[in-house]
Every structure is written in structure tokens, then in C-alpha cells.
Image (cartoon, rainbow, N blue to C red; front, side, top):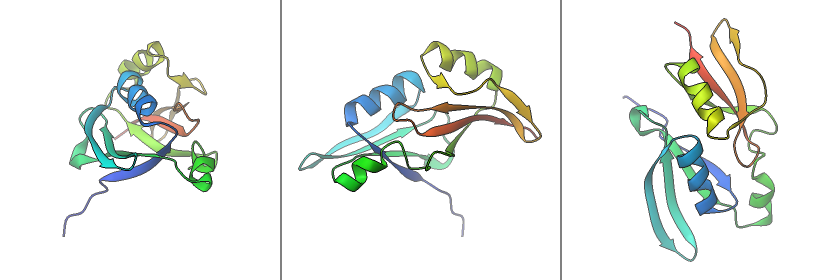
Length: 131
């Protein structure tokens, strides 16, 4: 039975600021923004060329526990990996859009990589896998 990971829920402070960041800075597409009533929305953003419908479900934090989790879902570690087919094409474009990289790019056995953070402080890898 074929399976794939479709969505990962990402806690955010505000729907509209998160949509603006993921679409304007990271270049993701807004694939859904549905009013669910009561201040809830079903908001999905997907990276360019996303395979298998993978994307982020943006969930506005409502409770105190959820609010404390914003920006801390990886507990300070890289926990999301944005793959690219051309690191050296995308890295300067993302920098020019204002993406904050936490390190200079490096080459590892597994690929070209640099850590960045999103608008809430979650750490990501921009990664062009080798092989």
C-alpha cells in the first residue's frame, strides 16, 4: 500500500503573517485557506514542486500550551528539511528575500546545506541531497 507524509502541522502566531512569510519569503504556494468558523482556518502552504501533496498545515496557536510551542516545535533543533534540486540557485534568492540563515553554507557527505530559521525561530535545513 503506497503511503506518503502529506501535511505537518506548524504552530503559528497569526495566519496572515505566516501566509505572507511562507509565500513571499520561502516561495511556497497557498493551496488552501478555508474559514472553519470560530476563528479557525484550514491553511495549507506547499513548497514549489511539492511531491505527493506534502505541505504545512498552519495552525494558529490558541491555548497557552500551544502559544508556548510556537517556534519551539523542534526544541531548538533542526526539524524541517526543505529539499532543493539546486542549492546554489536557491540560497541567494532566499537570502535576498530576507530569509535568516544561521550559518554559512557547507558541503557534507549527504549534500549541500545551510540552517535557516522561519519567522518564529523554528530551525530548518535548506538541503540539496547528493546522489
